[in-house]
Length: 276
Image 1: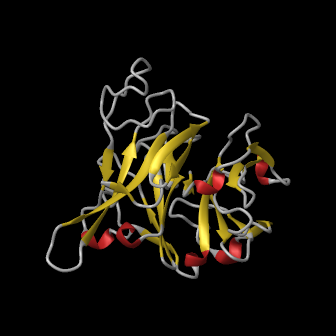
Image 2: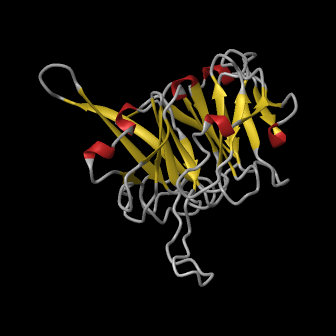
């Protein structure tokens, strides 16, 4: 299987920065014990006529020291902590609910709806699972995670946005606004605006509503900052941060999503295809 153009996002509260260079995973920065790698892979089946492209979404658990596991008992370097779990493939029961086969970005947004207290006794009755946003052209779909790894096990994906999303790159900053709901950042590819979409409800309310978004940055064009990703907190100040590559071949850290950025990588960053 070949990696289809990028490792998209992460599952977990704070994660490693995962980078691909010409389709090969090269580096990992800021490993976190609770992180897991979300990977999109693809291949084709030998058929008469045009090849049939198969796109898979897989979760690679973290071994606790920042290594994205493929197999149980695997070790990063032969003597670090062993992997407890194998990678898992995410799927849907109903093929009509598979919108990632034509997606241009998949984002592990965090837990939008849970955990749930169904009997109002103050204790969670339904465990929370990380959820996904899938950008399929101009459409933005919310998938709810589940124990079974089937993302339509509890309900079908929810269409949370249906206008001009093909013009945007998506970032997951966690709960940026502090209201207990995960939020979304979108970067206009050519205009360069950074927009914050505040999550307000368990059905993805606010995440795809353009009228409720606020511009929190300008000048973030793909020419100036080709690749970027957000973190709930890459440091220790409790604020979301952004890592971005620069048109000058450097890697920049924007603490608290503000300022002009601090160069934390000096060269070679234009060779990377994705940053997550």
